[in-house]
Image 1 (cartoon, rainbow, N blue to C red):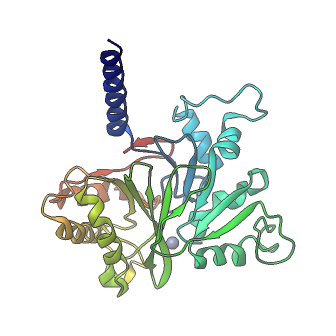
Image 2 (image 1 turned 30 degrees about the vertical axis):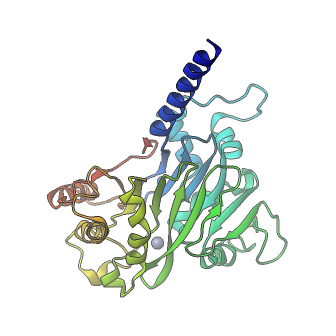
Length: 331
Ligand SMILES: [Zn+2]
């Protein structure tokens, strides 16, 4: 009798565990969706494992304004601010829920929100390649552009942010979360940018690309290395999605890309990954298209053109997504 009960109990437990396995994944909230020029809506995603209650920021072009818009849209309706907390919802999210920044490169449109909210932020690590962290300490947190909120660099160090240099192509823990991260360098008009590969406790991964040009235009093999690193995860069904940029429409000539992608180039690059894994291997993969510029011109919105151009050549069968600021996504 006891044995039977135990067996049933164990059966239920393992069924529950199996259910959790299939249900887990990742969540993102779009705090900024544009690649320029709209201040208050620049590239930034809050990101977490569904097995976790803490987020990291993937780039930080817009932070507080993104939190305000996302809260208005209901992206955080399932998060309650504890009654003893002195903070608003936005304050609680920034100070208590976001546990670090992953910065792909130090261009202003990827860091402005972090810099401007720093006086009221909590202590956090900034994860990046050494070149990115150097850019932050030399150009922003230097007592000239802004006080030095970092723990390195010019003059008195407020040490609110701890620069955490990531080695290339090595898994590193993400403090206060259950995730690990691997930094993979990208070529961005000759400068260095970063793709972050994030892994949850179950071994599922998500890849976030900072700005990048295509290998052929950048005369680089950086993307090729990223694709080959992703290959085993695609084979095992563990790549849950990606964020990658398309800054310009197909009408932009290669010499005017300045380290960015077009629809044609994105599909060409994704095809390299597909060819490494096998035909049809990227079918239904969620691909979030980021970094489309806000347009001041009358006529076709660049996002509409880019979506049309991607759909026209989507032989891979991937699922292109175009989130607006404040939109929540699950992968
Ligand atoms: Zn850039």
